[in-house]
Length: 120
Image (cartoon, rainbow, N blue to C red; front, side, top):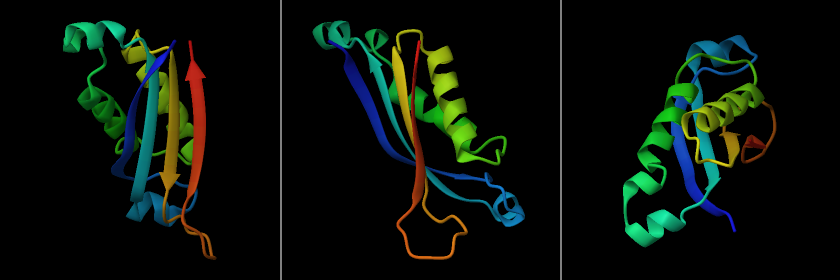
């Protein structure tokens, strides 16, 4: 059985996009993150060293979304997954949903997003 740590709706401000105004003005991004790992030892011992610190997951995502600009949100999601897998050896798979709530698209919609799942 595989367990999951889920961190929902992390909100960041970044400068990702193809259009010049996106890289100059920036915009909000939301990240949903699911990491699969074995949580049984943490549950039995109540010891943080047997799990993955949620604050550290948040900080890794923040560093990427608020850091170097990318043209595509696909590239941002890929970077998040790669960094999480590299930073936390106990993570078996990393599922990233990157949401761009206000892209410069004419029309009525809630948001656009990409979702990826990467593993070892």
